[in-house]
Length: 306
Length: 263
Image 1 (cartoon, rainbow over the protein chains, first blue to last red):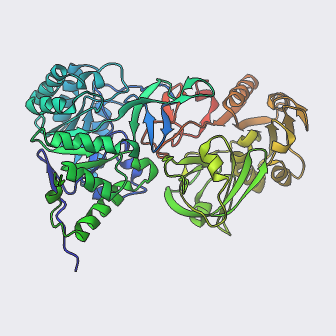
Image 2 (image 1 turned 90 degrees about the vertical axis):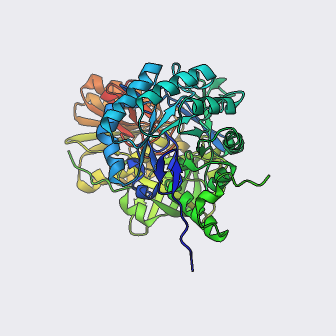
Image 3 (image 1 turned 120 degrees about the vertical axis):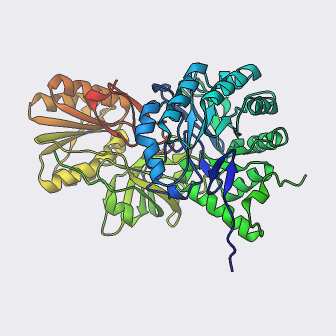
């Protein structure tokens, strides 16, 4: 007889029916993947980063394949928060799953304005404050790599946000635990990591960069060891829960992130490889729990035995 | 203007039935994919995961050359342009790959005589369209261009449809017009007989053909290929600059009205 495994988790006040969401920017707002996977089985849908009035994004080519991974420099192209509230959030809600809205800005004021717009709209269930996008010139990474600006953005968003607030961290720092602590001290309910690793790719034949913007963010299985290490470090540094991500392709990958200290996990680049990855990862996690006699997935959080 | 009933996309395990070299760096792979064979429309593409090549994680988009709905076969003509397509040349019958599709918006005929212009391997994604035109008795002409005669790998199939040879051009003059296929296109449009041009090939060729069509006052559609990740409209990698902003090649295209494209 197969026992029922409890998969529900609490990510800083956001109750997720299971730990699996998508990594922002890889899944749009879910509808594009509805032909391939059952979005209603997700723990939450995390939207593409949204700014106040929308951004055009960077020039193409915007991606390059690299060994066991890829670089992207999309540049947070998005139609703005009003469009998200009007078109995307109602669809996510129609699937009966929580909506985590990834919030982006070029300035502190823009982050706050986006959160205020989402609060006024009321459909978002949580915010993921993106202070770690490596592909925009203003905002993004520039906010996420030193403590005073992390404190400023997170504190300002905290004032505006009544819903659970997740702060998304960059791996492109000397000590990620310092940033994690700053986010926690400034009012974050949870942290998510890792955003992409800044990298580049060169075409030796043409002597040109493979990305129009020259540099971009590395994702995919190639970054998983770095991501696991950082999740484990942050788990040991802060008390708030962690949304772990970076190269998760299978249920077993996701379990590894939970053992390292994640409460929930996000599936990113895997969606491009396998359009039902979000469902397959959940199935793989349930299978693992059944096989190893885990009755509650929460037992796994930080369960690494060193 | 016809309306399409573009099917809901899905993913299917496809089995390789054949994979043969048909010209210099040109191959034809035949897949057993019955559902895809019934669903794909002219100009649409499939997004293929390369089995055994998983360290290269992204799928590869391939336009469909021809489908045989009765036998469930999907034919793709591909050119070896990088590591993925080079690896594919080693696929023997029996290999299974996941394909997603049918993806994108394909070719839509307009009323009047149509000119199909295929440059290089770009002749392949237009073949199903030509088949459909031939079947419905819609008047059309075909111009095919390539570097050299041995690279005009779709020439025979187009000739079978037309009942005669297509208008040919080769860069080296080995057959047909010596030079790019833009000159034959200009000559065709100068007849004043045409209502629409449908072009697929290298971007400089499509840009040139779009310019010739514009000068001739003839509508023109092109199929834009960009580096792609998801194939479903989510990742925003494959954007094309248009006069209405950046559009996704995978779902807003790959076929665009040439007048909308910022060349």
